[in-house]
Image (cartoon, rainbow, N blue to C red; front, side):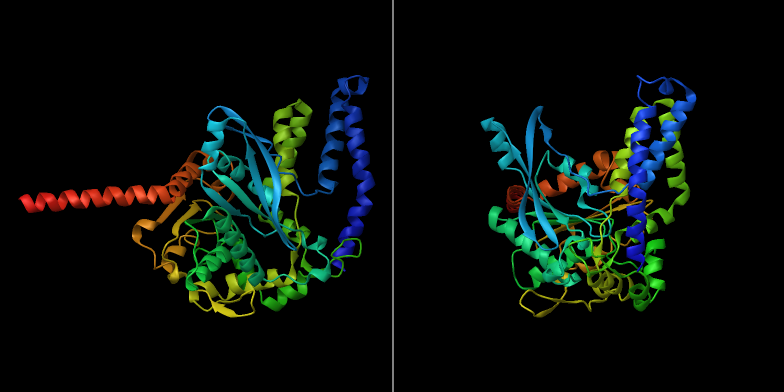
Length: 445
């Protein structure tokens, strides 16, 4: 019922939002006398703010049409590589007419970025993708809004998420030989499960896996987000936040955790910050500070665009990750595509290097939650495990913004390069030569 009420309210506000948009432009039209007065500016800014607060925010575009590599502008074509009912494997294909540049691009590492399925769209990682396109072939998981998936496609479980990741990794391995995996926030847990299961079966695993700001062990330094999931029973979540999609969507009747509830929770974590941000936007419009106003619009176009999650997936994530801690306790069994239950055993990972990244001020995944992956992956050699804590960075700062570009990405770029096959061979050759020289010195001593 709540979902239907929300949709009714949204539909009711829609014509008023459209009117406010037109009125804001009208009072800001330089050809009209009203735009020359302070009152006109105030009315225009008020209408603009009302429009921003009441409009419906649709899925944003990545909008990455080109990237500059070594001073050369490279065209980008976004395409769907694999399509599944609840996710698309999206590729950012780079093009160049220069033979040397093309050869350089083809030799670069292949990276699968696993975006979070936790309320926002994969476009939240636009800055991540943009940076990585300079030095890598980039793929990303683009999760579907569950309200757009018809009931005939079945339900979506946490096990399905793990199986999707394995399928995407295997697809890239078949195409390129192998790949690197980068997971941000929520997917760190299913990514670790996917790689663990592949290792336990004796299959080829990715060259490296990077885990950024994720709840590998949510019992460490619990945040407000963790506490909510831990302190409420699973039945409470099922009875209070799970609703059926209204009839006006393709996924009508599907049980989901609505995106608007997730968005409300996000805002409720820092209401004063959002209130100040909107008031500052109003003042920027009054002053004619278009640069600051555009930055506000760009952020909230992304932040306010949310998606619904299938109820089974959402509830199983709450139970597995935040209540029973199955991954760290070694009690997590995943149903494979073939219908076989398999135990998740991270200790079986031997050849996939691990990098964990945490933000010092992360208020979503607390300190130590992501780093806990190293305690689970005991089969890795010490030189294959690395951790980075970013001073002064919050949750979003480790994958977007200045700290991502200046601190995290250079570290991640080196980590991936060091774990490319040719880099490993070169290291082994150097080590072999060093050992041989040491033996010769010993024999002549």
